[in-house]
Image: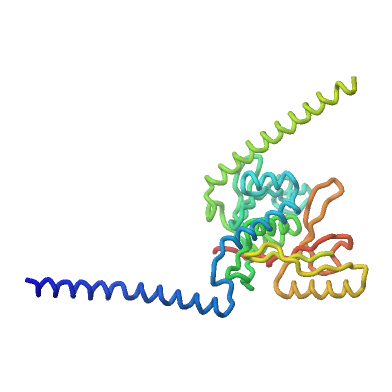
Length: 213
Length: 83
């Protein structure tokens, strides 16, 4: 009986060993690779959440210093920017002649073009700004830098960035329901902002009146 | 005039500074500008219009940079994303 149980235990252990060996091998390999990279001075080997946070903080400051106050407030509150399209000139060459259109700019997501008057989605423009020098192992810019790069490129040379982007129909990468929700949030945000501005204006006028009188 | 470059994992990095009215400074800035473009960067200049609106201008050669601009921002050139 004891011999049979011992034999079974040995077989079970052998099977477990066989099953877990590849996993253990992979873990040891990964650990060895990381140690070697660290020894070689490659900072990309160690993901540092503190560094990423600081990078994003710097990127937010830069974004804030470049965009309009209203745009910064929109990004801070809702997490995306709206950039008006520049090809709607009534005398312009494009098919959007005379029609206002805009882009929603999200960090590390496609730029979404839409018609503000109807909410109709036009296209998704998939575009990235990969830095292949990968200073910390990744080619991805901080979120706010990605947004600022899109903002500057759309403002400075809309045709060029649109030409570089991969064009897709809406819904390819960004859920249209999310965009509709964001457009609704944007509308509400603008109404609240306007109401606040009106209230502030009325308050200042009330405070100024006694002094005038 | 300051040159800043967006870097992954870092945010913007200061890369050069100089006074364009001083010829040596200008030469150094032109060289750095070319080096950044050769590395595949795009260059943009944040500007403020007469009505206070903030915009950006993309510049392809050093001479397109407004002389009185405070900073030029370099960022990796756009590439078509996820196919």
